[in-house]
Image 1 (spheres, helix red, strand yellow):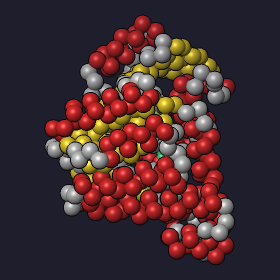
Image 2 (cartoon, rainbow, N blue to C red):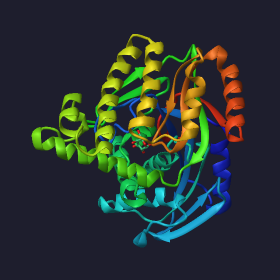
Image 3 (cartoon, rainbow, N blue to C red):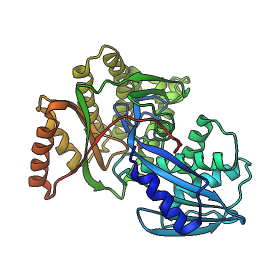
Length: 385
Ligand code: GLA
C-alpha cells in the first residue's frame, strides 16, 4: 500500500471539509485469464493489486453532496434529491452508488468526500470500479447500512450499468472488494461462488505495459459485444432451450446454430465458449504449478480477443508480438475491456529489467513514445484505512 496517499488525502480533506470520519482503500485489479466471460456468466481469474483509490468522507448536516478529486483538482456539488450523471465523468462513479443506495431504500444524508489514488486512469485496471467500491464501502460504514460485501459488489456494478451506462459484468467490483494478497480469485460469475487460488510470485513478476491508448469507442463497442453475445444465445435457445447464457453453450451448439448466420455473432460466441473452457484448463495448470502451460493459454486468449472478439488495438497486438518469442515471458495478452489499456505479462523475475528495456525500445521505435510500465503485486481488497 502506498503510505503517502492516506496522509495526503487526509490533509486535502481537512483543507476542504474539516476532519474525515473515515478513509477507505479500494484497489484496482488485474485479470490473469477469462476476458469478457463475466457478463456471459462464465468464469474469471482476477486479483486486486497494490494500486488503489482512496475515499475520505464525513457527513454533512444538510442533503448536499460535496466532492473533490485530489488527482484532478476538481470540485463537484449536487443535492441528494437530484442525482444526475454529469459530463465531468468522475463524480458519476460516486453519485451512481449513492443513487443505487437510495433506490434500494436506504436513508442517506449529505456527505463530503475526497477521492484520490494511484490506479492509472483508462489503463484497464478498473479505476472506476475501485471508486465505486470505495464509495459503497464508505457510505455503508458512514451510514451504518449493514450491507454485506456481495451486496455492495452488485450495487456498485448496477451503478456502473445504470448511472455510468457501461453494461459491464461483475468481475472488476468483485476483485476490488474480495481481493486477497498473493491469491487470484476463481470466480463463477453465474453463481458468484468463488475460490482463492495461491499465485506464487517468488520466481515471476506481473508486468503491465500500458499502450497509452484510451479509445473513445470503448464503451459503445463493449455494449455492442454484449448484444452480439445475447443475439447468439437467442438463436441457440430456439434449438437448445437450456442455453440461457454462453456459459450453457458448447462448441457443437455454436457451430451447429451460428456458423451459417451473422459471422460476427458466430466469432464472438466462438471466442467466449473457447475462453470459458480455456480458463478452466488454465486453473488446472495453476494447481499443477505449470506456469509455462498457463502462459501459453494467455497468448491464445490474446489471439481470440484480437481476431475473433476484435477488442484489441494495433498497439496491444504489437506489445504481445514483441514478447511472444522472449523465453523469460511465460504469457502475455491484452487485459480488460480492450481498445487500449495494458497488456499483462508474466515474466521471470531475474529478466524483468531486460524485457522492459527491449520492449520499451521497440515500442518507442514503432509508436513514437515509450510505454508506461507497472510492476504490480497482488494485494487485499477493499478495507478501512
Ligand atoms: C471490463 C468490464 C468487466 C469485464 C472486462 C472484460 O473491465 O468492466 O466487467 O467484462 O472488461 O473481461
